[in-house]
Length: 508
Image (cartoon, rainbow, N blue to C red; front, top):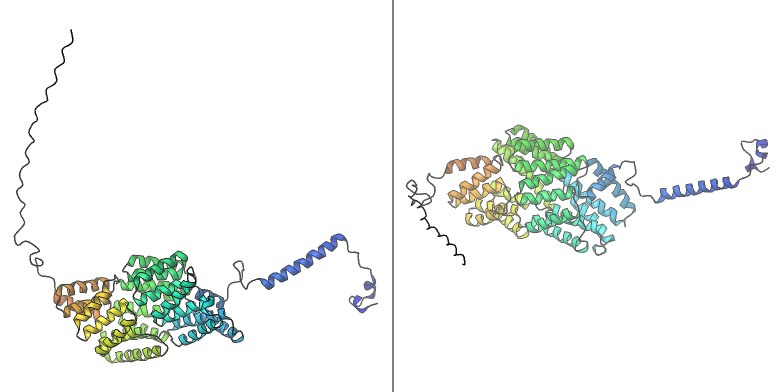
């Protein structure tokens, strides 16, 4: 007896003949074997996840989906994605798609942390992707990433080139258009930005599209449209990080139109939704300062700078401390501003606008003019025009300053800062009527636009006072208006009655 025929060592049972396999039994065995093969094949060829898969996506999958859609990702998910892709490309150096995803993840890390050290890492990953699969072969994800990186560094000319390269090769690829909207806006080509935004909405609606639509509408001064578009963005947001970002942007719109209380509510809602939303923390500080809660505002500014150290927040904190009479404390954030700007410059970030405004108000206005004049040759946006006009005013050249102030204010963007700058320039030129008009515009737009400059605007408006009674000369008559005597209408003359024709005599 063969050893393989024994079952549990029982020889008697092993000698019992097996029942014959019937035709029905053979069909059952064949069917079972086929089923096993099909199931095994399905497990081998099925993608990692499908829409019908009940398994929830993991952290790295959630982050990969977000960055692929141009949406914010949660901090913990983003960390998982970076670790996952770094490990993968270390063993698969020729995976161009994974290098592109890693580059996009680095860019999102830079946005969330405001740490420019992520930019060189993103650039290295994206360039590696393009080495494996060049742009000529349609590596659109890496090309889009390079455009996004350039825009994040405020190198909008380079961002435009990458966006237009993607559009030329694949006009219906929607991811090219957010890059183009941002690049055209930074370059000051607002008509092209609007066309790109409209094309984006035609190709794909969603968070990225609605955010860009809100941005374009805001730049044109269409506040209601901007708010509605951002509300749509909040409505389509899925993850808490996406919802928090939309709430933060809604808070910014409320702040710009002077509703500090509503802005505060939106910033706080963003922080409740995603406590890591550091941008909303800086916004809350700004709103608290406007509401007269200076101590809390200083606290929040310092917390925000601890999480996202950017020059703009350092400038705002320094000016708030100056306004509170704490000038010695203000030196620390001003010094931090210079340090942060130098760090960002080392990593390819252009901070010339915020540095120019700082130098114009707190440093060397002539140096600000030089810096911003160079910036104007690269980027002709309304922000650069306003900053350059203000620097020229501070250096004593109001005639040249007015030309740039007009460029900043005449597109339509409603900015209390821009209106105040133009008013002060016009005051320097002796145009009292224009000064009054733009000071009033600044206070109507946002009466708390700056802890330093808003009080100056109020003082200037009080000093100018109201226009003299009676209006400008020769506009109104010197004597009361008297209604002229009009001739009385005469009755129309009666027309003579038309005689009735006589009947013809009947023939005889």
